[in-house]
Image (cartoon, rainbow, N blue to C red; front, side, top):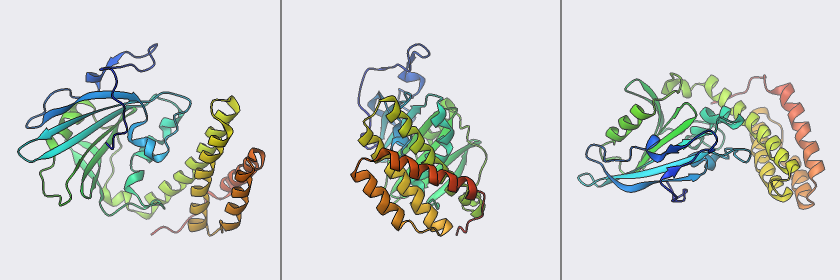
Length: 281
């Protein structure tokens, strides 16, 4: 799980006024079949795997917990992460965000990305130098992964099935063919452009509330604007070079007002153009 979590108490507290749940509510805190628990469960206030794709959590608390298992006979270690999302506005992007790492920068599915149906559950599956299984259960995100450069070791389906029993997938039915269709990719690409503008608004809102320094907010905004402009150039043929130069100049001056003005300009452009068809491989 790339060591993104901090080991804390065995009690996972989610907004105490509303939740008081133990790690065992999220993790299978025992051996599973031939897999021995090799790392005690831990938890932290974190967005888990979605933190890597800029999941917004500045206005709420998400909690992630993880555990590891090891099968001596196959010399395979498996890492599991279950993240409880808060049911906030950010959760509308969960389905969009859980497969972002399985796509190219410009939103096209990697050749190793497939959809699996396991015991009637829809599971996102990525097989390259190991395997990564992901799904959503309500507002929880489950990730199971292991490393195997040759893909020669048995899949840890005992673990996958144990977690599907505990957290059944609520992903809608889909197929590998469907996620590779031009229509599906067009929707994903436009959703990413929409999400990037939404993220800009969220960061500016936090700046206005004084919960984050303006420089940090502007850096986060710049990251999302760069992605939006790259996508607009690739899929709508609108050159981004001059805009990026202007925005970089505003950044150097910490000119929040001018960057907000550019964001308003892009939002107006998007409202007028997002329904237009784009050419997607």
